[in-house]
Image (cartoon, rainbow, N blue to C red; front, side, top):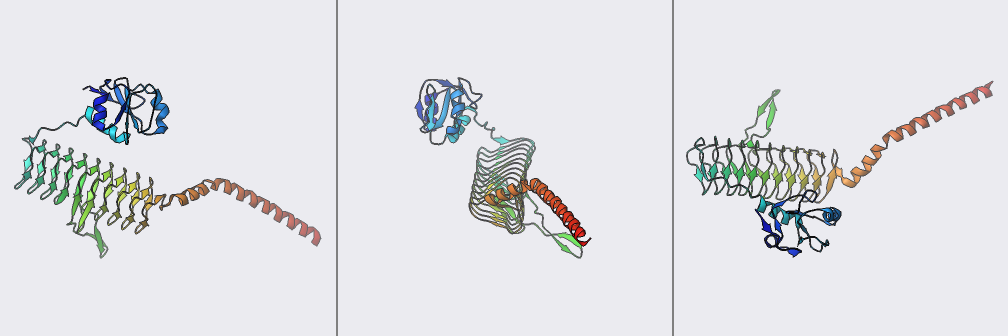
Length: 352
């Protein structure tokens, strides 16, 4: 595929500076791009890299100028570049239809142009929306539903009574709707409390590989619109994650916690039960949030137990000085011991 710079500028709604007829055949990074490829510059911080790039065209922020370069100026370079990436690397569209090895239960309802891959099992009364693709080896439990234009990658397991919205992407190996870790102790033994709730995943959610989202005990575990979840994340029963939150890899969220809108959760964060995270808060990587803790809206916390970033930095700086403080204390102790020895000697001489 080849596109002129003019055609690309029209696609992204940008202002063209330079050679409108130059042909572009692909996308690349600033460092690797050649004369026939397009790259993007996110900010002034990358000016030196942009000046040295061989890219045939650069998507740049508005007001960014670079002599002797062909540029497309836009308000949001990364978003515009994402459109160009899709232009040159369009997502393959599976052929609609049901593979002969797939098994469909009674009362299954399929929308138009649905594609169902090899060895898929769809239990009774499942509803799948138009143009949704179900990859090989997927299991979908009874009475579950999936909206339009969603992609369920191979070997995903969706338990019964799970409801998934439109334009949702779930990557391989994820398990949606398994039982929550709900037990009670009686007469010295643990007994299982029935997990009869559901999982609700709203529109435009993306779930990485190897993610586990437990069903609610009685109500629903809810993942809000536009939430993005990285690989290897555990979300326990009755958790609510509000819209536009992002959760990085290896995070664990315990039961009945509530994460408000637009929260950023770093990698390997541990959130205990009945925690509430305020809207727009940031949880730094490996932060630990104790049971029942409340993080205020917009707060940036780090450490275990998590505390405000300013406080964490002060305490961390003090901890880093512990070896030096130890040496100071030891030296002071030796001086005190020497002073004590001298006092005792002086006292002995006076007594003599």
